[in-house]
Length: 324
Image 1 (tube, helix red, strand yellow):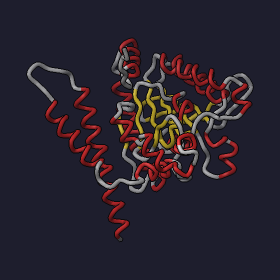
Image 2: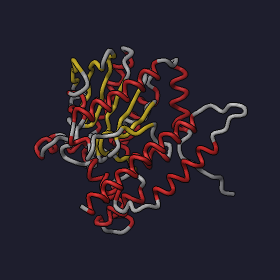
Image 3: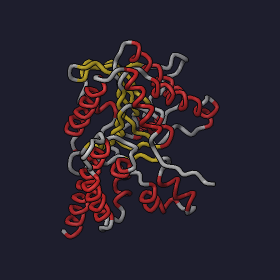
Image 4: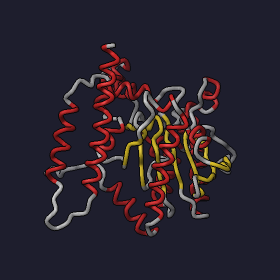
């Protein structure tokens, strides 16, 4: 009972933090008007966030990592099944390969025709081996590029669903031009003339995730993660012991709440209680609702304006200082 109560408190703190971070993001995006200042409200929100951080949240990030990797968590094809009609999956990179780690196709979302591209890890060992655990080869990124360009040609918005530990790290992938495939994919998504939206639905790892995530809007599901590397990899480098992964997870600031606070994403999508794996239809309904709203906003913009805002969004990320 005591453990259940503690978990309930932690979840309550997390929910409140997400709402506060979303409100903070909204305030920062409001236009500056003469005589109107939001500094006091922003200060109060920041103080409350600091108070929540100081509460007992030991291991919270690692718990989210485990939820993000849950084998029953909905994947791209699950979200497609619960949200799109008339979905037509497209195969192949037109150079002789079809990488199952990335699925792509065209479908109808409500009244809107869209292209959907996403990682597919598989739900059992056989599926995961066939799809290389959602870690794409260069052919997978070439397939994504092909479908993205096809969508642009016909004026269709592009939705990407990210769920991968990273790009496939094998020798054959490296010899096949893995780095170039990822870089080219990022370049194409950065310059698409149509509206683009990304949702990190599970694990957003390294360049394998970024290859599909340079878009107008980036959202994360509540229990997803987004990081430059895995906690195990970070722990192996820093402490020479992958068992220190829980500590690394905290240090990497890889949760959705962290990413929103850092300005890396545009919003957090709440999941069903205990995680998206407990109720696929509800998780899908919440995801597609946010995607639809974002696409509606983006479609009202002129193409050149949208490209300008997309570029400015990424140039504004991070911070630096000049060392003399």
